[in-house]
Length: 373
Image (cartoon, rainbow, N blue to C red; front, side, top):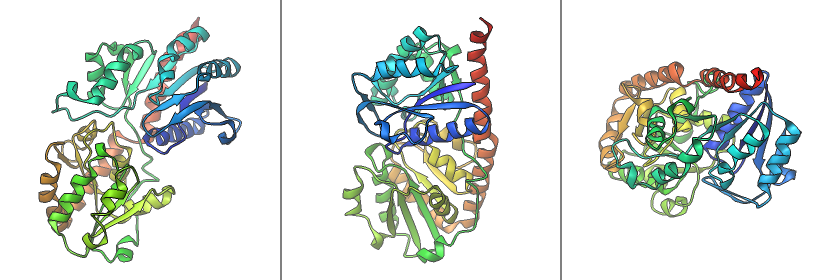
């Protein structure tokens, strides 16, 4: 089967990781994959990549050039794929895809990534809910729409997307790559216990609540907090929280093996987000056997439910962390038990292999009517 994949290669974000991991895994399973993405032609690294012109792209949304629709139409006519899978980049082009694929007779599958708030909050009051409202009529015209959790599915059904068009296929990680392992991190840091946050340093990630709780908890010189990632709030937060409080800012770590090494050397992963989809960073930490603490934003609470981790409310995160941080420092056996349960949860529900099995079944379901005509 030939799959045309429309996604992102930059700037780095969860969508980029999702597209890279899934397309590489599909090729390993014998699929022909043509990767279409918004970039100038010289950024295409192989003859399997095809560029679409754009005016602007960020980690959150993409603004295509006026000629992007026609470029996509010409490219699809040339490639003649069996299916187009769009890992939606929050672009105006997303709304044209059903018409383009309908004209060409190509089945259309989408993965819908936007984060959302806690199940306990009034979703109608959030900007994320407005994104779901805006997209719901368009998504109803896709052949299938992949979401990462039952919560997302229920929300889109409430907004009018036919239930039969929706499929829950969670993010997945490779548990052979992301696995517990030996690391020299603690000796390098002269630490007895290491906490880690990995993600964007932005308002919705609520990193400041973690830092406030960390400073107030005053856990001592041999307990460290690693902040991995960058974003608009990083410069101001770095001015107020630093090595004197045991906070180490590592910035964006590009090398996957180094990110794995950091996770393998840490004890606790903390994700204090106000909104999420399904955090791939959380799944990676769980697969590496870390004790995990996250809010119930998006599907993260669903991932950690029933003892696979500690789930916080998105309200009063700093207050909750002031209690949790010292408890986790002083109870290493509790950390170990949480880490074992976290990895077991990944093995049960969130492996990349399981993700691909479900995706292959969906592709066969969508494409087979086309072949039978």
